[in-house]
Length: 493
Image (cartoon, rainbow, N blue to C red):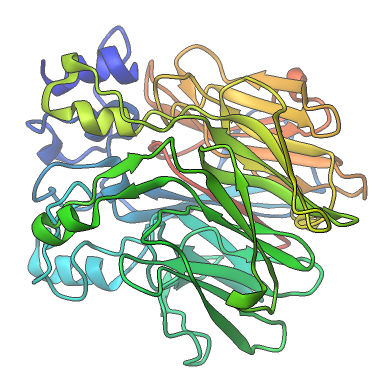
């Protein structure tokens, strides 16, 4: 089965007419990998800021700021088997001001990409390995392709495998260089650092294959760095961290690779161990290893936290929980079977309550809909909130965002939703505040691609009435690929 057949069957991102994908590199044509075709095909051009055509509705006049989105977009033909997570970071931006909008896109100029540009081709293998420990800088390329964080007037691109934060101009998307906060930051940082909207602290973490397996960091509002080594039983693969006003919640999931196999072959193959409990460590924000309170929970995995808060002596954490992340390859996918199985994303809204007074845990499903990539109003991070906005996903295909669901976290029920339409797939949708102070007084912004003709659009939806559909629909001058995480930067245009 070739890549187009796999793409049509498995990822369902080619139209029935087989319309050619515009602005894609020629080198993908003979590579048998669905994550280089269709919705996932890279684009070859950066685009300077360009005014957008309004095709329906009106842009709200109180929408003032920047929608910014990170995505994997390989610039060079891969050296070996390509994994969707391997692509070089490319940031797309939509800037809103006074009822007008502009779009632009630009690669994140990491050191690795700059070296490959000078060479004229790829240098590093991808995450499927085997890793090249003789390659310059690192055994696989730090692509800064995963996340975007706005902190203290800085826009930072981050990598889920832990890399050097890359600072980006929020108005031009030009790379300004690696950010080390005046020489204070000397370790790599994972994606999903969190800016506390009340204190101004940046809470972040780093994990690794060698001790210390986990490091917890806080860059406080005064610019002082607080870094602590946290003991774990071995190398782990956390993807996010919970944050309340006073605590961090560290994730120790029973999904980890065989250390001996990694030492011998350079292959990191994660395995789920259902006999091992999940552990969450509650750490005072400026505490150390001795201050961590560990809570054992049912075995699981979780990519993304929705929000956390303190309720008396209890820590409440809501997230998108995967009950069993075991790989279940489909033999019809041939040599791509393991990768495609790994990319399946099955998660539902879940809540844990960790009681610091009694040491007990209460945990339960809030809903059974397959939904992920949660967003909340930024001002609510770390405090009790009511609403969250997640992407509606099919259970068998990752990153094919079919719509947005709005959850009422007080009831755990979906209270509103919007479907992008047949063959149309969207992006993570951050909350953009409106004029009012109510939690859901504002807008959701997203980018979509229609696989019938590969046109892409920016949609603006009223967060209080998703079902009514977009209040504004703008045509993009460039196709956008499936992407990862986004942020809204209020007031930047």
